[in-house]
Image (cartoon, rainbow, N blue to C red; front, side, top):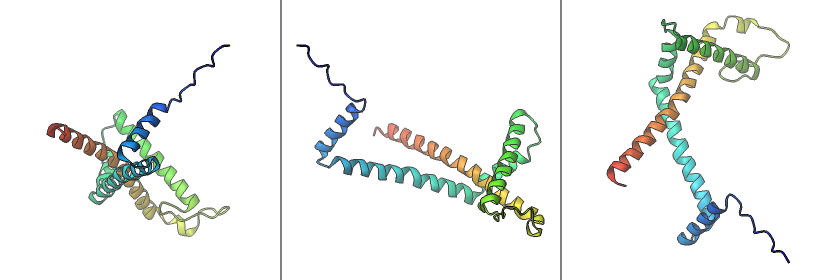
Length: 162
């Protein structure tokens, strides 16, 4: 009589075993450990990210970057691409903003063209797209700052021998 094939372990088996051992060692139920880790991880990831974003916004980092790209007279490949991406992003944000009434744009009613109220709106549109472009740049700067901060903390721990 042939032996049955050995039971195949799932690819998560080593993780399950390690977490079960941790749960037993700390005398904490496994679901509690997982939930605690998820909450702490999200707090330590999202709170600093929001802090860096709003810090960059308060300091005007995004708007400065946008102005630097827009005012760049060096027409190299990177300058041209930056301007092209900014213009494309502005068109997209305005189109979506007007369609759904978000990003500071008024919602356009279907079937109606440009009204008198929106016809003389270029100044406010420029202000809205400028703010959006600045916030988009801040959204790019924030994770970069968070990454640099994490690297700094890790290198400090290594230098302290922790």
